[in-house]
Amino acid sequence: MAKRLTLIGFIGLLIVGLSCKKSTESSATLTGKIILSQCGTAVIQIDGASGTGGGVVWANGGVSYSNAATIGNYCYLKGLGIRAGDIVSFKTVVTNPQPNASCIVELCLIAIPQPKSVIYVTDMVKTGP
Image (cartoon, rainbow, N blue to C red; front, top):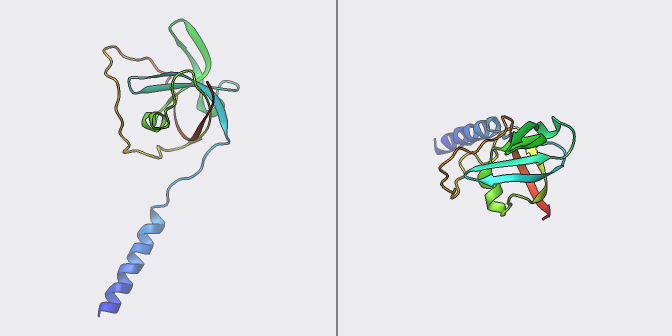
């Protein structure tokens, strides 16, 4: 009886494990510059033509950006010590690889404008100041 229950349990875990496959599809490596990182909001200007890597045309404070996107996994960025002004290489993924991540975020009294395009990044590396 114990062997039968063990076998049923193993088969159940195998089925659940196969059905919970995470999406690992990512883009080619992209580059860009972090143009805003504060109050829980991070925006990147992605190198390349508008639309590359999911970017859109966006204006902020009188400055226009041709290929900007909001980084949806802000805490990932903070954990790497990436800041506004840093040049980075990265890949994008379809879903947030760390949906339950938390980090300390500055309290801001005004709303921070951000592009309507949201991307999730992974494999981010600082390549310049």
